[in-house]
Amino acid sequence: VAGANVVEIDAVVIGAGFGGLRMLHELRGRGLRAQILEAAPDLGGTWYWNRYPGARTDSESWTYAYSFSTELQDEWDWSERFPTQDEVHRYLRHVADKFDLRKDIVFDTRVVSAVYEEETGRWLVTTEDGKRYHCQYLVTALGLLSLPYKPDFDGIDKFEGEWYVTGRWPRENVEFAGKRVAVIGTGATAVQAIPLIAQTAAQLTVFQRTPNYVLPARNYTLTDFERESIRASYDEIWRKARKHPFGYAFDRAGVTKKDVTPDEHRNILERGWETGGFRFIFETFDDITLDQEANEIASEFVREKIRTIVKDPDTADLLCPKDYPIVSKRPPLGHFYYEAFNRDNVSLIDVSSTPITEITAGGVRVGDDEYSADVIVFATGFDAGTGAYNHIDIRGRGGQTLREKWAEGPRTHLGISVDGFPNMFMVSGPQSPFGNIPVVVEGTVEWIGDAIGHLRMNELDTIEPTAESVESWWQLLQDYINATLLPRGRHSWFLGANIPGKPRGVLFFFGGVGTYRKTCQAAADGGYDGFTIESIHSHRRR
Ligand code: NA7
Image 1 (tube, rainbow, N blue to C red):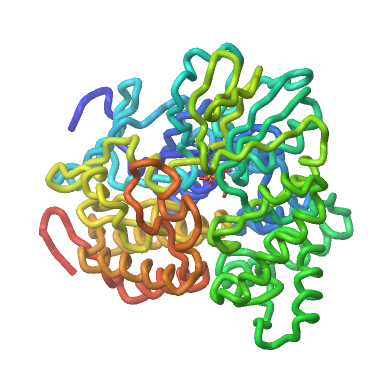
Image 2 (image 1 turned 90 degrees about the horizontal axis):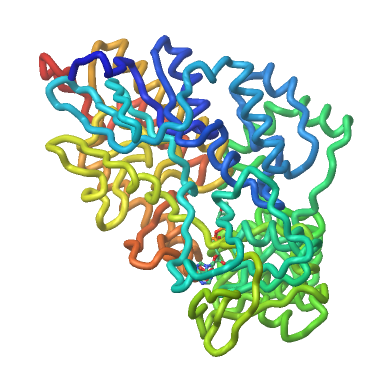
């Protein structure tokens, strides 16, 4: 490919979220000319798009950040335990300014295709507005939950009110005051939005298909003293987070069900409930995700709390998850979520047996019942993992599309690379670990940086995994998830089961962030074991 309209560059990174920004900095630090192509008008990824009421992290602020720069972590002041969308977005903008990243980000630019050229060993990336980039390395930092899913209900075009999708929330203020609002969905997003919408809406109707185990967030404002002690402990924080199964700076509980009496068991769960957040899961008992009995005790504990908080027994009963174990779906964190159902203006509609039939001109119809609404909020989740990949025409060796390759579900090695797609690297791609994303992302970015460094130092051109290592990774993913209670989650997006027609399969690595990091490091230390590395011209192989 040649021509005036083609930008020749070392690397193209798609996406300016947590992963893409960090990747650009890494590539630059290694002397590469790189550019980010970003569909949105601003950076932030998830933290750009998800500006619905109540949007904030479920990770503690001091671990929902980059660790690569001591100066950055020392100068940034988090204001709360769980920062809002606005604060995380400000943080990422600060990072971009500090490291002068914006000059290499092209905004409002959606990538439509990326095609690998076998003769040159380069990728040709084309954008919607016809720009073309020719690069040696392609990094897809598309996000694991970036393509919103909105069910295809009949009648939406006839609806006379306003409707919004949480993952594509408008930048201007949405007014709920005095309005009848319908929220569809009760996942992590809806759980954050519902208590806030309830405060101003005239009437809020929540449509629930599957109740969740919502844990209290117990958010608080950080004092200067707390911020100072966090700053003083960053080494320890990152050491713990990198070892933790889900990338959090938590201690292992060191206790399982068999170590305690029923009274002690209850006291520990009470303490975890008071501490709030995912600490309820990870700092109470180490066997909640693994052992059915330990899990059922924790599950029943949450149900009891729901029945205590929610005054109307029928509503409480509907809010109690009954037929799947806690943590088999990602538990949301609530900021007075269950309490919201005690308000006179909030009602809960069960759509588990009779699904939403259609959207009408005036609201939502479920069977014979119609619920009036001026505003409908779709908090119906994401096409996780592969969704954003299917929206780009990615073609590897022999013109094979990634869509075809993944027709039965994603196939990768380490969640980073795919056989037949040389020099394509995924940051938090399908089959990488699910957990505290910044920690996962930094590990992956550094690994990709090292792999590229290795190629350049040895004057080699391409790296791609062998078909065998991709097959083994798939098998390993099955083994890990099958050792847990996770396969029992209802409509779980971990398994692709939230999207009608999506192939069912394990979309994430559940062997733990610590194990994952070690595995990736071992592959690099072993001279990129499981990968084929080639020189295009001499066909030198190793
Ligand atoms: P989730 O957790 O996938 O939640 C989506 C919700 O939408 C969930 O309650 C679904 O019920 C519901 N849903 C989906 N389709 C329908 C239909 N057709 N009818 C009724 N209800 C429906 O997405 P979130 O955005 O809340 O959270 C995603 C992650 O983002 C979160 O975990 C964080 O990691 C960040 P279901 O449970 O499928 O029965």
